[in-house]
Amino acid sequence: MSSLPTVASPPANPLRIDLVDASLEAVLAEPGLLAAFTFDATPTPRRDDARHLRVALAPAPGRAALECWRVDGPVSHGRDGDIAWSRGGGLQFGALELADDGDIEAVADAAYRRLQQWLSRSDHPHPLRIWNYLDAITEGDGDNERYRRFCVGRARGIGRELAPGELPAATAIGHPQRSGRFQLYWLSAQQAGTPLENPRQLQAWRYPRQYGPQPPGFARALLPASDAMPLLLSGTAAVVGHASQHGDSLEAQLDEVLVNLQSLIDTARQLRPALSAALGAGSPLKVYVRDAAALPQVDALLQARLPGVPRLLLHGHVCRRELAVEIDGSHA
Ligand code: 3EB
Image (cartoon, rainbow, N blue to C red; front, side, top):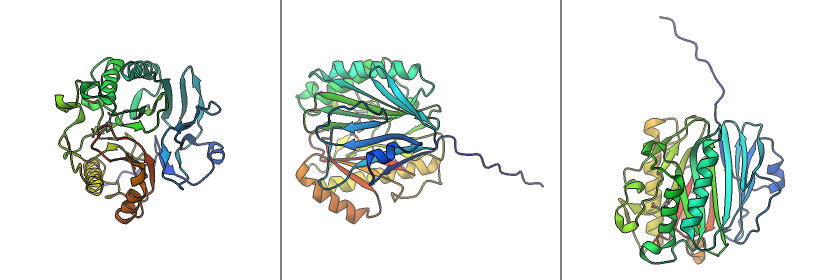
């Protein structure tokens, strides 16, 4: 019996996501820099480099906050009307910000219509990961709550029902301070990935009517086609089944979130056993905390639970009033 030689081919879609302590100017000078994010409560939009996005969320005091996405270059970038984009390594970053005059349903409809149109004409047509940041996310009662209106507009803008196998991973978080803007950004790829669900949670697209007329269309995580890319974790809160847990305890919510994240890693490892078995140095997390005064407590709890895991703490509102904390990130 002769053994076949193994051919080492370069990874098709390598992406590295890191939280770094560096200057924005230094990272924008790197040839393989796909996107850089800074976090700042009241940023003014800047138009000097399409790869730089200022997210309107304040970081925990005293923390330098810079998130970088890097590919094996080269990267090109530019603007196409209201969309800022960059592409390289089989991946594409895009960002769209629309003025939000208060009708978030109409704003989300317009934004997703534009996104769908843009992706459909793109050679990177598969959205892997989408972030949504909007003002006053839990303002309004019942079906008039802005997050629920956002879900209605998002679904209408997409214009067709997505099959479970095409759902991207996503985050939807509220700006604690009114910015007057809806911020939407995404990572898309030439190759589609595999959306994953969490066995501890009901699929969000199957949420019952009590959460609004339009269930949110996202997958709990997404495994990109290339095994050189990390698992992409959606915004994860203390939801089990469809119900919020531990409304009276931030600490218990945080622990439930960590169980949910571990469950997603376990699920992903059934498909990709080479993924690390637990959150670690290759798992940068963004931690959204509703109450700014609780940021030091959450920081201390995470330092104790996950000392080696890079984290960025942000003041952000979760889309259900009773939820105090949500975490998203990636896992290599
Ligand atoms: C949840 O589990 C929390 O509407 O795109 C998390 C991630 C949440 C994405 C979205 C909402 C979204 O339902 C909320």
